[in-house]
Image (cartoon, rainbow over all chains, first blue to last red; front, side):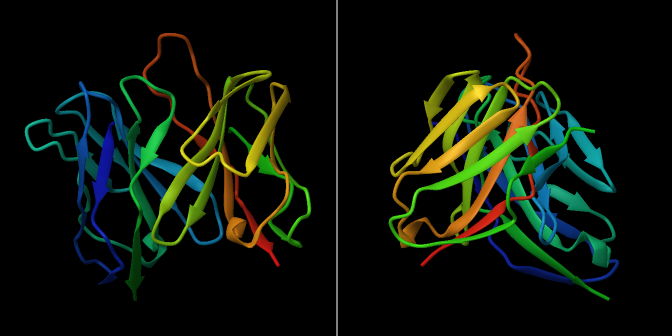
Length: 113
Length: 116
């Protein structure tokens, strides 16, 4: 079935550093791809998504590009802030246009002042 | 804004008790989900409901059941709680529009359940 492999953490950065969290996927066809974020003590919320190949999703300074050649959807941010400290999850539908998502195991990011 | 609420943030129960976790969404969404979140394992789907009274097993349904009598409410039931069900439980909903690509899921804040 469709699956996602996400870079394991934890990741610790200083404020204003560059962030990359790797995500690669295995899928049939070209499903939508998602990044969710979980701030401390909260549920997950959508950070960004891309619905077709070569799309770039962006939000709050984060970006990810849907690359079918490398089956990747890496999350990047040019300058992280302390408030970006959270757990980040890559996700895709379990198959095709399914409503069910399969999530990566999550990458915990800590940003120090 | 979509709001998904869960009945408790923290819950402590004893082994063998019947446990009900309630989830309510206010956006008339078709789909609702129950996940559990464990360190090192990420999120795993327990059950999924795509309509009132309709349900589908997820990846780890054993030891759980669900109920969806009204569109806005989705309950997770632990028939006889066990210590290995100690976990964070997350509820989510999505619109489920016909013909649409996979929709964004909206999550509640989670219930941290401890079974002693």
